[in-house]
Image 1 (cartoon, rainbow, N blue to C red):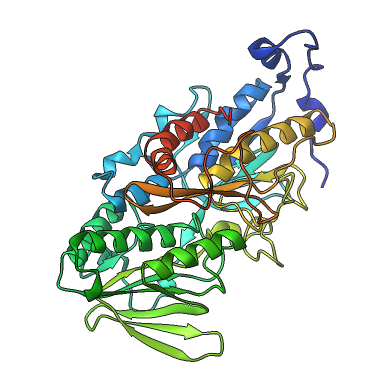
Image 2 (spheres, rainbow, N blue to C red; image 1 turned 120 degrees about the horizontal axis):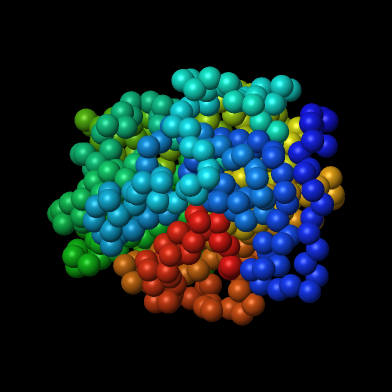
Amino acid sequence: MAISRRNLLISGATLSAASATGFLAWELNKQDTNASIVIAGGGAAGIAIANKLKMYLNGARITVIDPRPYHWYQPGQTLLLAGVYDSSDDVVSTNKEYVDADVRWVNDKVTEFDPDNNQVHTSQTGTLNYDYLIISTGLELRYDLIEGLDPDQIGQGGIASIYHSPEAGVASHKQAMSFAQSNGGNAIFTRPKGALKCAGAPLKATNLVEYFVRQTGNRDRFQFDYMTAEDSLFSVAVFDKRLQEIWQERAIKHHYAQELKAIDSQSKKAWFSTKNGDEIEKKWDFIHISPPMSAIPVVRNSVLADTSDFKGYLEVDKFTLQHKRYSNVFGLGDTIGTPVGKTAASVKAQLPVVAANLTALIREEDMPARWDGYTSCPMILDVGHAMLWEFDYSLQPVTALPFKMVDPLEKSKLSWVMEKSLLRPVYDMMLEGYTPL
């Protein structure tokens, strides 16, 4: 579609900085514009792109809309389960710690996207007009699709789910330790069908709880079953094979194409559907639930949603991250319909792509940047060891650095240290808009 007022948004030619380097060159190449840019979603992706755009544009009016009154460091949820973090305060901070003072923050909920009129409607603030729209609204956790499950049960009676909230992460650790210190029992870990944020989290949870049990010296009294609705443990074949080898050594059984449909907290039973329509009943003493996930309703029910391969997710070109039908709309983060990439590491790789391509659009130039699907998953094996898994659209191992720091197929203390201590500073830099790695 044509972008109204585009020619009015360019207030001057880009300053030439051919002879400048470093920060000076960056500043001189910033585009002058009075464009109104609305960012729907103020999680990691929304905050980071707001700050990133300040580095590319002079004079842009940037507004972020999000109803959550705090920032949640979601990669820290597995560290809560591990017991490395011991309080929800370890993953919660204020939004204002990260948001540039020139960015307008609207603490509100988007109720409708109207891209034909370049408008976003909210529940309390009213209608916001935009010249460019960036959607980074994350995912909805669909606990409602599991019959018999009340999310309030998480953290009680052997039910765990680190995805639910910071508090659930703390409570899930307590449930895991209580199970590990019991006289034995059955542990079940679930993985739903389709895309989910941090697809490695259910695997990490399995590894951690099995580790807690081994530490008690009574491993033979416990049974571990990983129930996945998918046809593999992990989408990258070489990583999938390595994890199968580790689980064989640790006596963790995995079951494919079995999707959690219902749970009874009183009888401690769970029911799974199979690919051919059969139903399987499993008894459990401890269960970690990874719920189905989808784009939030305002995205999946809008004209902006994909209707084919990634139904309900924001329809974007998987390389430029520009919407396929509305050229002044971009997406990033968990809400976009792409084959991989629902991690903070992917957001970090997407930020310069969206910033560079939106700037090029304002300049009426061809879009120069491409996202190759890069994502990263530090696969925690126990408290003290992990494997660093990086890959892209090719579903082959890659590395973001010019050299390989660790062997991704070998148990590594360094990979654990990176997950425990180094990723948070990099994440915080990303929120500020900096993506040096």
